[in-house]
Length: 327
Ligand SMILES: NC(=O)c1ccc[n+]([C@@H]2O[C@H](COP(=O)([O-])OP(=O)(O)OC[C@H]3O[C@@H](n4cnc5c(N)ncnc54)[C@H](OP(=O)(O)O)[C@@H]3O)[C@@H](O)[C@H]2O)c1
Image 1 (cartoon, rainbow, N blue to C red):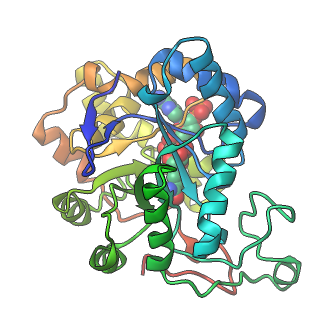
Image 2: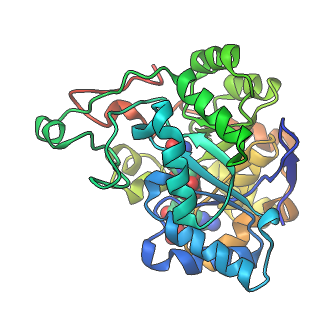
């Protein structure tokens, strides 16, 4: 089992979880079941990943077989961009709960601070980057005029109704966090951001932590996940698994480079949610806290690889209608 932290609302969350993005529908139920049997308790899903039915089925099967109880799991999803309007927030959350076959989520993030024109479930679900046929033909994305605080307040109501235990935000930068904290009644419990040795964001991470908000890193292996997506910039970036600084530290501790990359984060109290489809990797990724402890100097050496290099950026979603959320 991974080390467990207490969030600012008293709920407990293990520092290592399983990322569910790109787990294929055909194998997803079994992978979630296997991950639970290996010891995973956090499942980081999202409406946009298109596999919530299968994630839920794996969870329910494991509960039914007595591997785990629902209250021992920490189930996460994310509100997609198309449902930011307060009237759609609960609808989208209920769709997730019904797809997963669960009564509540432990954590529900706003996936991106980008509000897109809603698409009815019957037309396309999950809609991804689709805001209607006309927009698709014109190569644009239409926005919906909803300020982030309106969306957030609808999530606060979902906490009060017991549908979610914690609210999180994802891909929020500093100025938006400042604004949100001025207006939130229930402070966010977690911030999920892209974070790896090529994008360390040390100043921001420390500030967020000082506000009592748990930082969760996604894409801990840097370019790897985006090479899978065919990204040219990711393909042109040296893999972190073979980086000589990371390799030297891994060899010294007799662990894998992936374990060094994950432990570098958890030792800074940053949670991680690596995705893997391989059983041996699932085990390695989960056991980092038991198998390796880096020295302060080694953490600094890994941090020094920073290039402020981001692979997941909504500015690239549409050439004609980019979203400069990180500029
Ligand atoms: N909030 C957001 O906007 C956002 C964006 C991106 C991701 N996320 C979340 O973060 C999770 C993790 O990020 P990610 O999926 O982008 O990528 P990631 O976990 O950094 O990398 C996954 C890739 O690394 C490989 N891998 C996993 N463990 C390995 C190991 N021990 N050794 C070597 N290779 C290994 C996987 O291959 P195999 O499967 O073949 O093992 C896969 O190709 C996602 O699944 C999702 O839940 C959130």
